Structures are given as C-alpha cells and as structure tokens.
Image (cartoon, rainbow, N blue to C red; front, side, top):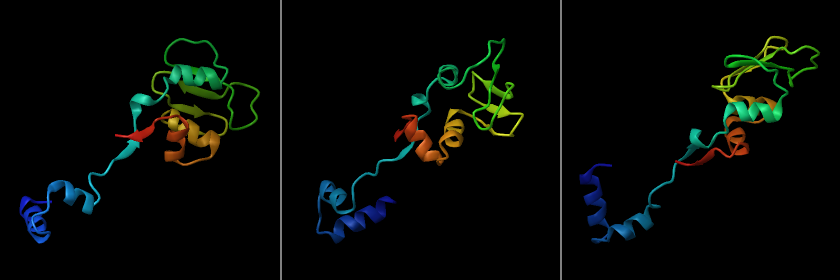
Length: 120
C-alpha cells in the first residue's frame, strides 16, 4: 500500500492512531510456509525408516516400501533426500516428497508431519 493511501485511511478514520488502524484492518499477517531448516537430515531420516545397504557415495540402496520388493530397487540420496524406485517408478526430490508418498497426504500435511511447517 502506498503512503498516500495510508494517509487517506488515516484521515478517513478521524486521525486514528496506527495501533487502532492495525486492529481495524487485522494487523500484520503471519506468513506460514516450509522451513527447510527444521527438516530432518536425509541420512538419519532414511536410516530410521528404511534398511539402507552400506555403500559409498551419496546414493544408497534399500528395499522399496511402496511395493512388494525382494531385491533392493529403491535408491536414496542421503545428501539431498532424493529417491527413486526402479521397480515401481516412485520418485521424489526430498524427505517431504517421501513422506507425501508414504502417508498419501499433500505437501502441507507432509511438512507438518515432519515438524517443518511454521511461521516464516
């Protein structure tokens, strides 16, 4: 909002104080969103939920939890959180996407489950 409009509102309300104006118009709004700093570390997150096979580098193998799997077809990047199953085609970019698929929920609900949705 421009300063001129603020002044007009101020004059229209009989010279009300800014505190009164903020109460009248709802005050400052809080923005909510994904707080990436609150996301769990991908290596720890996947270690708790999957039986990761030991390996070198960022990509590790595990049995896929999205379909019946006898051989490890799920590949997980323990640095970024990305995952891909070569058996069923499930894939995602981070631990939020993994939580979305496992619990069959939307993005916001998955972020809330991980404790990473809050005031910015």
